[in-house]
Image (cartoon, rainbow, N blue to C red):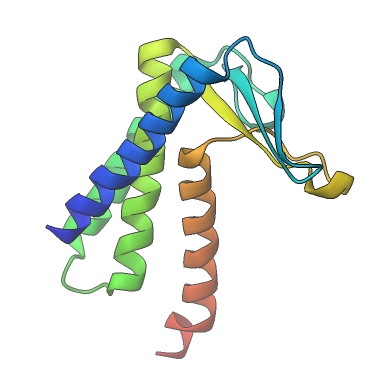
Length: 152
């Protein structure tokens, strides 16, 4: 039950923030929240990060569906054998994937709106909460598996 709640909350955060971005940022100038560090800017992304693979909606949708089925299968098959530090990040990755899949199927693009130029050090692509959920959970999993699971 907790995992379903985590999934629902993550998808809701992603979708509600994207709806907010559509109604408040679309057609507007970039909003600088923290100069050179955190901006809000509306972007319709029909590809992947850095604008690669533009207009490949069907391919991305199919890949996402396959990945989601794979994660669900792994979680269901191994639910008694994996700990919470593996389950929660996988559920959050699943939620992020579904969040962007909803956009791709509904809009034919993903709504991105968070821009972090990192003080001018690196021009990071515009992203959304789903992207953050996937990226941060994947990083957490890599660190956890490498440093903690390997020692068990």
